[in-house]
Image (cartoon, rainbow, N blue to C red; front, side, top):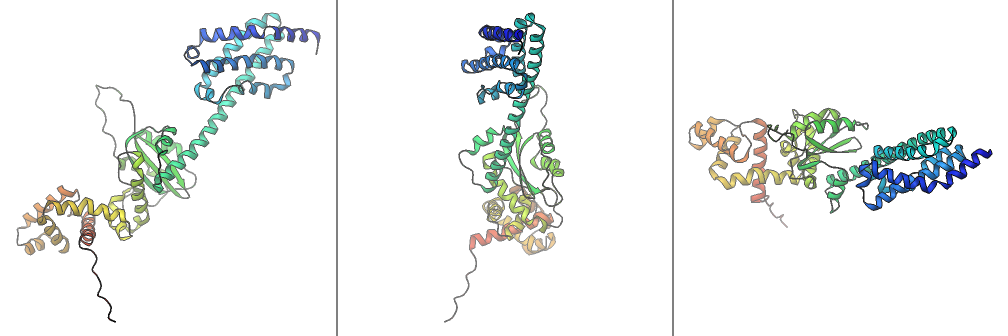
Length: 399
């Protein structure tokens, strides 16, 4: 090392404290976000700036140390600092430090001025690398946490930590939720699914378990645009599921029933999983198909949730309304949905049967005149009757 460089290094070491003081003052004067930070984080930012100045002197003494000297600037920063200031703010910090150092040392020699410029470039690249690695680690952590949340919803083994895990994922859903289940290849275009969901007014959690793809949908909590302008009607979950269908492979696609919030989504997931297991039994099933449209198949397959749904949504409301509607419905279904045959058996006019069937539709929301809905209603009457009267007891064997 020549004598002039030794003199410059000795001079740089004597003005280190001065440069650090000027840098902190300049940060306070030029960066509003720095003045708004809590004292602890202001101190951490100041420490990064001082480390940058000290590292510059080490780098100037030995430029071959660039890789570790530049990245060492950020090793003094606590982990929470990287989460509290953005890459843009970090680059603003570097710019302030470089300008202070350059103003003070550049007039001394051209070599020092060039050294400041080279070092500032290396530090900027080091900052970008630090934030890139942090973002990559965050992405991997988010993916693992998202898989854990989706698995908890599917198994119904949610605990008190589920809401905090959902919040940690940056979930923007608010209110109602539903679960969509289908199949997909191992390579899933996650970005496309999230983008489609966002444009449909929904947020989504994505889980891929082997070839089974699970989407947990929720209403996106968006800020109102113009209070005076008419707000568009939100899409139903079935319409949202239809838009997301191209993210799945060919095959059944089942949408679970809507629940009040994401924490209760396990009920929707159970229905969707039970539906996907029997969906191929309905030859002309739409895609996607609501899980409640598969209630007969699910009940036959032994799904207790389907049986309870049939009883609670169809059998019990009809029983509570009137025995007349129940009798008409039994006759209508037993006579192959023939109005005339039903009217003859009940000794009423066919228009009376039509009126009663319309009343049935108003009470339970299913129309008995449709082939598929008639099957659902008839399944509800059967499982409801079995639940009410109990299975027929077999005779005791003779000794």
